[in-house]
Length: 395
Image 1: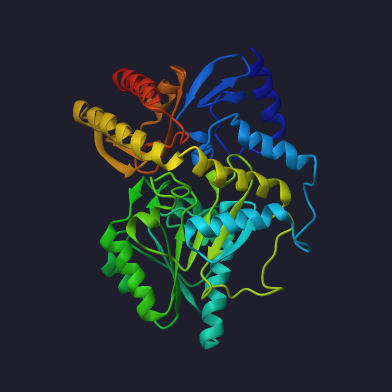
Image 2 (image 1 turned 120 degrees about the horizontal axis):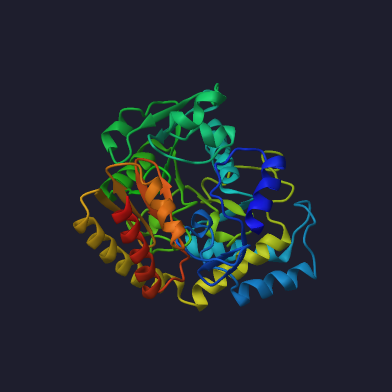
């Protein structure tokens, strides 16, 4: 088998920071992946919520090919047309005012943290500001993003982290209020927690945090890296709550596989000036041409409408699974970001599903996470459910 040969080679040269599933993927088509030995898999992971448009979208690929033939990089010492166009489109769909392109979601969080501290320093001159983050959150693996990630498991071996980070309980407004003081410069949270177990924010919680930030003149940072870009059924999940942040982070499906992220700010929070922040590769013409095409395709191919229709169908089918199998404890989520919580770790179920040709991934707290490409149809849900049910019954 080709896969065994490749995996053996990989183990010799790749840093072992992942316990990889023993599959070597070679190509993708639509919502399916194919490994080097020719086996076909229905993808309900989408590269951890990245491949919103699936694989092989001709408009997306044409945009990349055209840009490769023109220009791939110049640095941010100069303007480039794709970055300007992508930023204009992001501003339009988000309602925000300014965009800084990064290479990843974790870098977007880093920029958001710096924005919050700079905003507060300009206001009061202090150098000891604090940020309130949430328990069970996940914002990335770099030192700043790790500092606001509310899971000690990820932090233990890398301390000391950033000082001045305090953790409140997600969906508990009173716990947030109890931490606010004169040093607080920002509150950061995911509109829907993904890695932490697929927990949507309660409307009264998110709106209450927004009011609290307004009252205290502190910044609200919303992490839309996983739940944004249409996955919840709104272009950004916070829009479904009627809440506008001061800073928003996006990535994943923005690039449909390209390494791009961004933090967006309102004009009020656009405090960074030349010398405050930078990136060599961020916003280069190639990735921005891809992001620009993604945003066009979302509109032209009515992606949000599909998410809402098929997301509702997925919800009903997962509710049936929950009702039938006592091992399923809870069902949460929105759109095409949903999770089933089990009474035991569901790793064996995920592995059994993969053997049946359906890719599922887990999240914290015994959760199977369903984050397929946003272009799936009802028949793909049926195919996944059949494999899921068989996997549950075997385990």
